[in-house]
Amino acid sequence: MPAQVPAFSLPNAAAGPDPFSLSALADDVGFVVLCFQRDHYCTNCRDQVRELAERYDAFRARDAEVVSVVPEPLSKVAAWQERYDLPYPLLADPDASLGDACNQPVRFGLLGRFSDFFGRMPTVVIIDRREAEPVIVYTYRGSSTFDRPAVEDLLAELDARSA
Image (tube, rainbow, N blue to C red; front, side, top):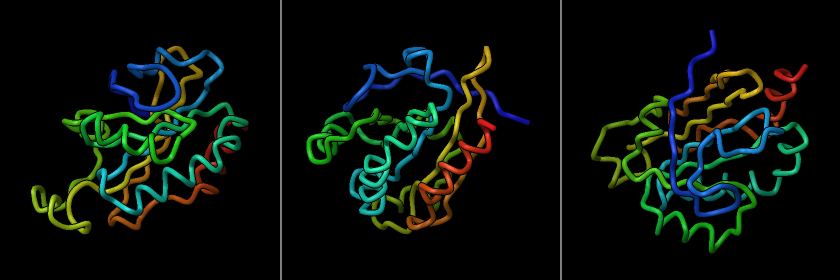
């Protein structure tokens, strides 16, 4: 059964509405692909945001908006935008409120600040906003810094949901 989407409004360092919320998106956006990153320093996260940018048109062709959420202050998130010039929203979630609301896994709590193998794990949530109330229809929770869904798998999931 699809899960309800927590209400949120977060600062956006890249393209799209600022502050970002689901209600601020255009009506033609049927799906939102929320990619929860680990932190500003994670090299796998940096690779993922660039790969998503390279495939952005494929997501938009499926009426989906990609959104990356980083549990860092806006200043650190803005540094990513300056470096990578992402074509999609890049949100700062400094207190990890949205990550927590979407059950982003955290391994070994505070130790996550000292090693990439601890802390927040990558998570992807797909939201279907085609109905009156948006619902979470897909969740992928990584178990390590390397454990992320492939872009092709996310696109296939969107294709299956649109059929």
